[in-house]
Image (tube, rainbow, N blue to C red; front, side, top):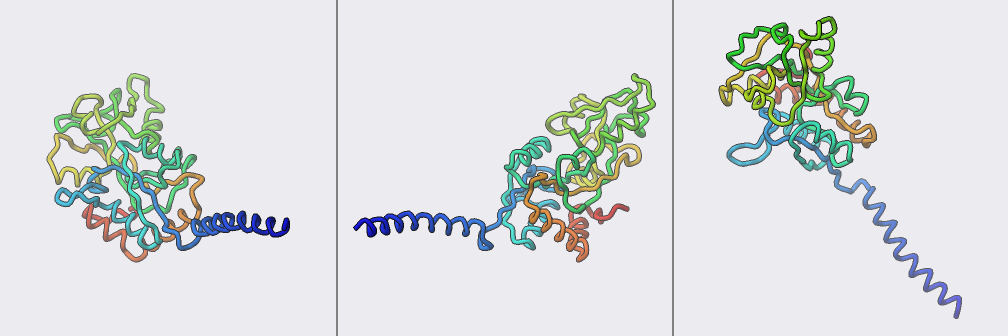
Length: 266
């Protein structure tokens, strides 16, 4: 009798254990839907934005990510934040896997994040108000320039300022919100922007701004991941980006949205 009770109890405990084990296998098995959490902005034309007629996301970044997801078997989950700092914060908190917002690869960022293969190159020039007589970088000595926190432009200004007296050094600041709108409000004198972004921005509306001087930085663009990211995900990104370079997909998307091939460093 005691043996029969023991067997019954053993079976009762074994059933939930088996179910738990089976559930774990299902969650980690190949049949599980793979989710790629991508954080971005909703109005960064032409990189990523909402179509005015349908309200759906579109743009260069959107199509690149969706193509990577299609080729690697991931389903994308799009998340949104107001600025890059918040987006990197989401990666740090484990709430997002990567950022799709033309993120430049800087030495400072490489210390904290793992970057994918480069898929785009952006030339950055200074943007200022249309009536500003400035012709180039030297005309902004002693003035304020807005830069992205942790981006590739800050090291340029650090180097530029090295041998200048204090009153001639360009003061770099960071702000929240639209740099263009803050420039128009007089909060600083200029800000670096990619030539790709500026050209397409001005096609949509003739803002009261202009670009001046030669490019100050040519920035490689890649997808950032946490240092603790799934290595299989990063490997899949890298392999697919290489394939998309080779088969011309990235070049075609660049031509579609930027009217030029910005996938090469030249």
